[in-house]
Length: 222
Picture 1 (cartoon, helix red, strand yellow):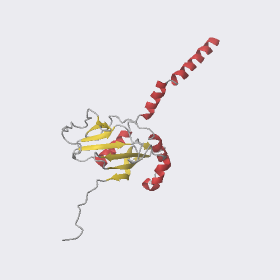
Picture 2: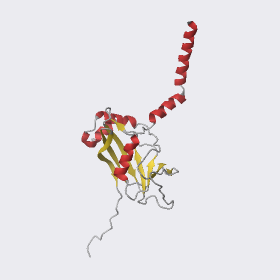
Picture 3: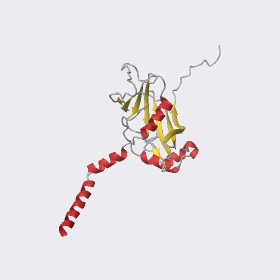
Picture 4: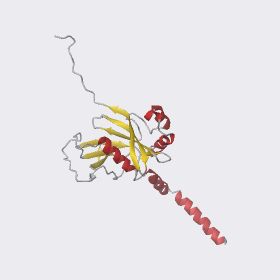
């Protein structure tokens, strides 16, 4: 009996030690940071309904998720900051706002799970990854073609998807920031109808438009 208790105590101690190792902690963090496969269906819905055109052949996507709701924001979005803006006329469920803030405290890595019908590449900063991920049909984009061409959508960035406790509402942030620093950011709201999710509402979080230089006019008419 004493021998069995000794063996059991040793087993418990070894388990505690193994769980306390950095590798075990890192593994659990990586699992927590993984984006669920079902979230990519919502990403796809946003891309196809809001950004793709008949001319689009390639989409460039930021590899890591966004934490901010505007280009000049520092750090993750807090619950207080979110509520101060009054997005969607303040009608978002409180638990959905809390979840959005919670899941977007740390950036997560997007994987090759998009299915919106055209090829795409991931990018990190100024570096565009290879190879291109082709979908539905082969997509060929000439290397000499500038990234600003209408056939290339450069670039989209997404937040993590937040879901309400009842799993009947979902919320995400997406931004389209062009190489010339113009673009816009949007909050996108979904509702679940049966087993499917429907894009319910969109609110513009920010916009940056190109400044058009006005021609100088003479002070006095001739």
